[in-house]
Length: 81
Image 1 (tube, helix red, strand yellow):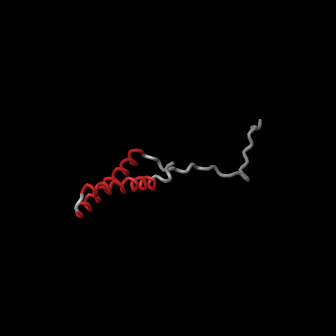
Image 2 (cartoon, helix red, strand yellow):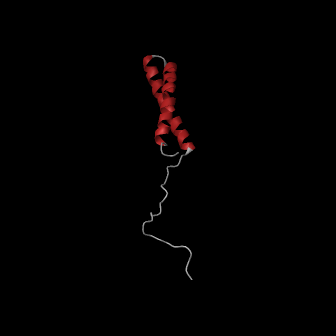
Image 3 (cartoon, helix red, strand yellow):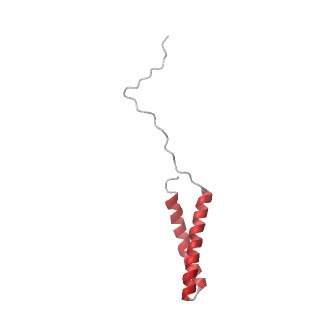
């Protein structure tokens, strides 16, 4: 008795292995966003303290830190999704 399935290997493509994808970790993304933002706020506070206005330095650091944190998260997890 012959099997009804014919297995031909000539001209067939090799089986494809799934590529391991980078996993997206929401907690890691949040920590990276928060860390970059806090670091920018701290640098802004130091610069503001040196200039004479800590409050404006914190505000400027937050204003720069949030978009910079978003860019850092996008760069870190660019291949995850």
